[in-house]
Length: 114
Image (cartoon, rainbow, N blue to C red; front, side, top):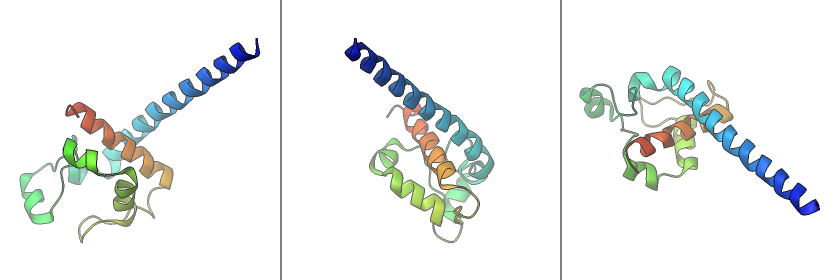
């Protein structure tokens, strides 16, 4: 009886964790749309090829780049900025919001087949 109760509790925790991850990705999508889309485009690549050359805007849909870039690195880039064009978002976004954006960025790799 105790084992069944324990298994049900663990199952509930796993379900809540997975649901929270999905919710974070959804929140991340809304934050991405508001904060990132103007430079990185709707699908994670620069909206205009000239931006890639002039501003060195990186495509964040490349599965190889996403696979070798840990979450902590992506979080750091968003919070601290990169180069002269990507300003830091640490003052604009909470850490949890940045984490949600990173979870959403990971969905780009899934869409690309990684």
